Image (cartoon, rainbow, N blue to C red; front, side, top):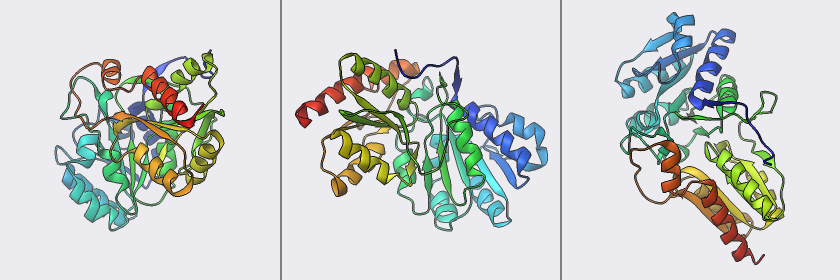
Length: 319
């Protein structure tokens, strides 16, 4: 039996919508901006509750980022909402110049990220966004794992000053984080304690890692599973401590292998502790149209793929 169970599935974008409504009720400085995707971003409840604090920007994402930067200068806390592809690739210049460089208190909230966007296909399935955003000075990057943690992260952002990229998704996904679980920006979350190998994962891949741990446990392999919900700033101390403890690392992410979580962990390990690492990520490919689960399987992001990489890294470790 897995150490985690769930009673329902819910999309992480609904966690954002519910969190936004909650902080809107508590803080009148919170404002919402959306680029013609209010329903898809689950911002409708906020719009209805606070129409004077909601700005429908139309299909003009670059303008939305500029307006958000301006609102932050006026003391507001703007939360922008659109698909991850449009939140980063389409508006990178505006984010770099008007938000990151100027250290503006803007929350860039991005749904429909990664392969699990599904049927909309390769043009919308951005797999480069975490790398793009974490390279920007001043930018905080958060990739929560389920509905509850996305809600927690959204609420936390209201009290966190500075540019932030919050990445979440479209499909219904198991809710396994409890409302009482602590969420701290920049602090990794150990979900399962183990001794043989560490799996560092984030986003939808955390649940995949939990399922992989169940398979590996039946084989007598002790797996430590750590949720790196905050990519930047990375909890370096937690990464080093776990790597030293287990002596082998696998990273799992719904992102390109180049520039993502795996790269960041490798960079950290090479400077601090010499242990073998294997990567579960998209290997320099664009996605395609399909059902989320089928795409995760095809592109090597299934629990079985994680199991294979764990077994490989343990061979390299010499166990």
